[in-house]
Amino acid sequence: MKAFVLAAGFGTRLRPFTLHLPKPLIPILNVPAILYTFALLKEVGITDIICNIHHHAADICKSIESFDLDGLSISFSEEKTILGTGGGLKKCERLLDDGDFLLINSDIIADIDFAAFVRRHQESGLPGTLALYATSDAHAIGSVGVENGQVRDFRNMRNTGLASSLIYTGTALLSPDIFRYLNDEYSSIVDTGFTGLIDHGGLGAFRHSGSWMDIGTPENYLNANTGSNMLPERLTRRVREAIGIEPRRVAADASIAPEATVIHSVIGSGCVIGNGAVIENSVLLPGAKAVMGEHLRNSIRDRHETLRLAE
Image (cartoon, rainbow, N blue to C red; front, side, top):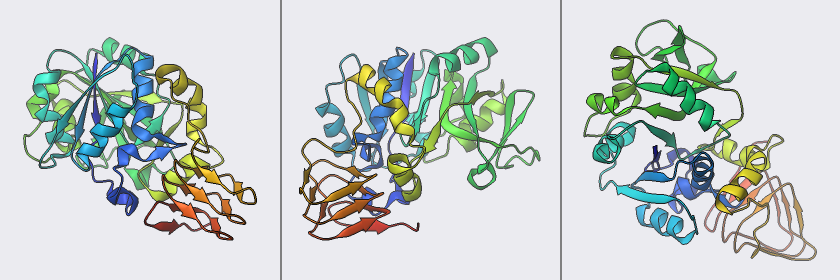
């Protein structure tokens, strides 16, 4: 089975940081977010991966190629004009038309049981299955309407009146049937492909009961690195065993002065923290600096910008 990883977006919600670093490379515990996806795919034997790219495309290629991801075959579909989740997938039809494949967003960190997901999909006989996750924020995020074990609606866009506490995780198992309903131009896979499958063959629902986090907002990103329920720490062993890279709070080449204090924070590669500085509940992205005596709290900082979040 192949996997298609959506990695072409602009990361608008994570600006200004994604102006300089594409969202798939934004690090979680000093590991680029997209590598968590690669690790879990490899763990279940999915080694043929296609990534669509657009924003900072060359940086994504260069970064991924710099890692020794032994056993993974990763290819790129560069979009000169961004095509959205629907058009981007349609562009790769000839690479994915030989069997069922996994579709996954590059900006989620989750411990989805892909083996169980695949079994459920294959047993259903349906042309597509979505991984769903229960959350009290479903109404704000966009709830999925489910009836008789199948997905029927998204945010009531089909006027079914169906609502639930479930959201789409950004992960789907799909048959090549979906390509019949996709457009070549910019489009959303929800509006085209998923709707097409609902009306022609059905779209199954797989409930993911583990952990899931969308890192696409500054608040979620900070929480993924420093929150009381940090998702990535649960995946540390699995990432290490799958691809030989271990998430860590402090990069090996970071420079922290002896009299500096780091509390519940993540310090990236090449960061410099001066004497007397206090870094608390914050993330310093690669190359960021904190000057002598500075107190940084509940913040995200890169080489260019600092974003302070409400406590």
